[in-house]
Image 1 (cartoon, one colour):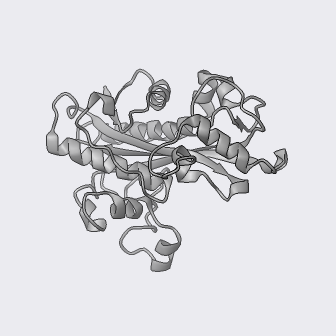
Image 2: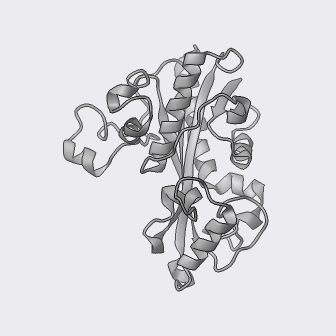
Length: 278
């Protein structure tokens, strides 16, 4: 069985991941690894934050080699997600969990974040309240195995689901393209706390780290509705529905959400690696 060590202490997020991945994967969290370090999410993109967390935790696990966790087929999974509102130029974005925080450092309660969002959109009519949830999931192998072999990011890599395209952030890339499209690897390398610059991540560079993205389009309601979910779920109405995420229930949300769509790409990637190894 594949083991994912998920870089989160958020029980709601862990539950969603377990529900989407199904019985074929064992998902542990940072609650199962009390000594594991917390990582400051200060990158400028969802992908950068996800990759930063995954690389830092994978590095820690390799150093400590905890047998109960780093054995067989083990991956670190980390995600970052948030809400992008068009009328607010993409805010709250990567600051979604900290949106109403006075210091900007720690997460704010969901109720305060929702209240601030409603206040910011007070004068915006329904037609102008378009938004989307976006999720980036980074997957980093902790150890190699015959089933999931070491896969350098070379010419034979599976490039279609990556958010680290070869022309952005890799040797030989056009410098102007790099400036226009900072890759999550560049973003994470400068913030990772494992050193400074891309050289600090050389131990990870060929370990097959990948970032997958999913999004769910919708709009922001005028008022809160529903008691399910968490975060901005009571305000977000996905396209094609009239109910909020908080009203739709877990079964529907786990089929159409931004995180579910990113996890579907993770599952496709693992299936492709199995096929390549067979």
